[in-house]
Structures are given as C-alpha cells and as structure tokens.
Image (cartoon, rainbow, N blue to C red; front, side):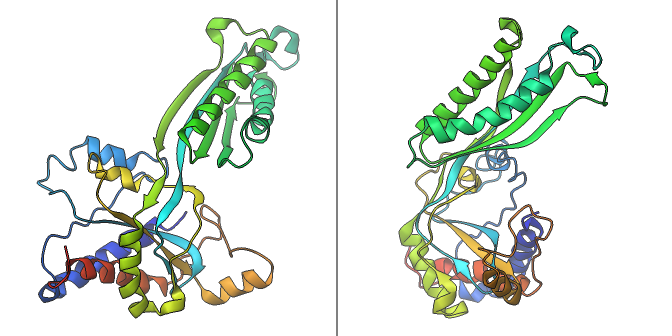
Length: 314
C-alpha cells in the first residue's frame, strides 16, 4: 500500500473540476492513470503499447506526476533537481539437487546457497562501492521448497537495486553475479547449472525541472500557505518510472509532486516519539487521511490551471 487509490481519486476529482472551469483555461489537458508503478514496468509498457503513437496525443509542453507521502495533510513538495533513485529488479534462481532432508549428503541444497547469498550480498554495498555513492540492495523475497523434510531443487531470491550512477548499477549486478556463482561453485554446482540471473523492469533516476517546480510552487503557496510548500527537498532512494512515460520526449519539463496524506496529529505524535514519519509506504499502518482527498484534488488542479491559464506564458 502506498496510496494509488488516492491517486486515482485525485485524478477523477481533478477531471470534474477542470471541466467545470473551462472558461479559466485553454489548450489540451491529458490525464493519464498509470498502472504497474510498483514493479516499475507500467510507464514503459504504456509507451510500448502506443501511448504517443496510437491516441493522437501531441507532444506535451509540460508533464506533471503526483504521489502520496506520509507527511501531514496540507503539505506538498514541489522541488527541482534529482528526486528519485534509479532502480532495477533482479531475480536470482539457485539450482541444486533436491532430496530427502534425512540424507543431505545426497543433495546440493539451494536453500542454503540462497541464505548465504542474501547475507553476502550486503557486503557488495558496504565493501565494494565508494561510500559516497548512493546504493541500496534489498532482498524482498526468498522462495523455496514445499515442506519441512524436503530439500528442494531450486531456490529463488528476488532483490531490488537502487542507484544514482549507472556505473553503480553495473557494480551491483556484477557483485550479485560473482557472489551467487561463487557460492554455487562452492557447493559443487557445475558451470551449466550456475544461478540464473534475470533483470526485469527498471528506471533511470527521476529529475525534476527546477524552473517548472519553482513556477508551480507559486500557485501552490496561494492554495496551501508558504510554510506548506516545500521547495528544498533532498533526493530519496525511493524510485519512480513515471518520467519514462514520456518515451522519446525526454526534453519535456517534468515536475513530480509529493502530496502528504497523514493525519497531522498522527504525524506530530510520531515526531514526538522520535520517528521521522508515522508510517512508511508498503506498511500495514499506511493510511490516507480522508482530509487529503480534497487537498490532493486541488493541488494538481491548481498546478494545471496555472500552466494552461489563458494568459499564461508558453
């Protein structure tokens, strides 16, 4: 969970609002709901499926994305520069020789290989990369076996890589391959059965256009107040693929807005407890406060009306 239901609700509300205010703007406004953001595959899939070629959409002058965040309702981030890390998803399939748990000497245990690999992967970041480089390697799933007394034939490890520099991505992938192959060889796995590594879905870092972010901060301050519009915000190691939806139009100015959705009292209580936030994305406690629905609808509406106002500069 990280608020995609709120995103869709905001978009529908925005559509209703701008239709009622056609006298206030001119031009073309395209509202697009993007699927599959979590696996970082939706944006590219939409482009591959003809988003810019099959639907008579003109090249946009501006591109705005929007996402929830666990800040207090009424706060929005409109900040230029690098905002999100690049990311790639990687699967590592360890192949072994299965058998009965009572006779492990007759097997080559892929569960043990996977367990050792998960621990050793952490040294890739801490001991092979320059400390000042941004790099995160997270294992989100280890999947193997079907029962207590059976050593399976394979074990699957799913990991997520985050980076700012493409060279770091190469180092992470090379490190994973080296660790995985080394462990498999140690367990007597032949060359033709070494771990199978699959890259699936990724994105380059997301970089907001500072000029556009600063421009939109002006009407957002009028809406929310000066202190509730954040224009200086450090890059996050979270990732996005929304900018890939532009396809070949890589020169279009983009501003990815971060809209807060937490109950302000809950947020304040979390700060008093020494927490950075009351909950994170993909956490069971993630809640979009209902007060964030009208605010989250107004934010993109105001931003788009500023860009498409009849007297707006192109």
